[in-house]
Length: 295
Image (tube, rainbow, N blue to C red; front, top):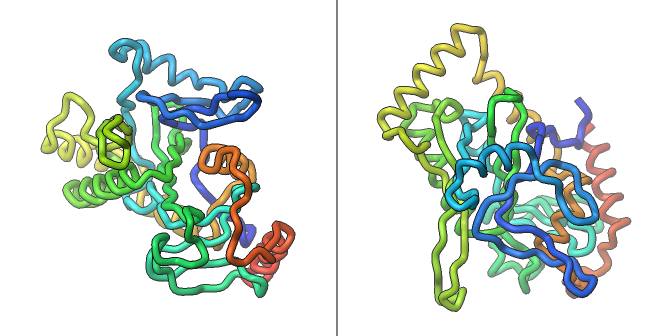
């Protein structure tokens, strides 16, 4: 296995609750009140829709896709949803610092260092909105690919907090059979003082419509038993994923970095950083140096 390269679940497409639109020659993210499922192909007019989008939208009320039936790929909740405080370079979208509120891995002139992480509000390095919670949820949609997933990326506290709680709870109540639970992503809306009472939307994870919790757990147990009898080793899959995620200090894909910059830092001038001497060439040298250390 190549050291320094995070081995992440194969991605078949993207799930979003918004899209990027062009206004006056500037590409800006625009929030939506429905899900959109896209392929990994982007043209000048935006991302091409995945066939699953049209298939699920046929049965959606008013054509608004607000629920998506899904299953998890792993039994471990933390493998399905990875979330950390992340400071991105606003131009390239590459992570400069990743932490969990306790410790962080930060790129410095000396390479990647492990440092205390006080969180975004108390961190001098990432203050001013530079550091955000960043979550990646991988889910299985449909039955065409046993190991392929669709990815939902978000910097929203509401989505990350809700998804983390639900995954943890469903893992617990199912006796560790999260990968077999019949679930669905559900779009919810709420208004707050910060949103000036206008609706904001976030992603929730619930038991698939038509199932009670007890029925969903019973279904998971039956499916887990069947898969084990057929020779599928879910525990080994979780172990392989854990090893793959831990194969690099930062989980990022070169292809997704421009999307991160466009979606989460749209058309912003580079913010004045507390350590402006860290250039992108320095970042790359730091990553390469780190690969040599881990190799």
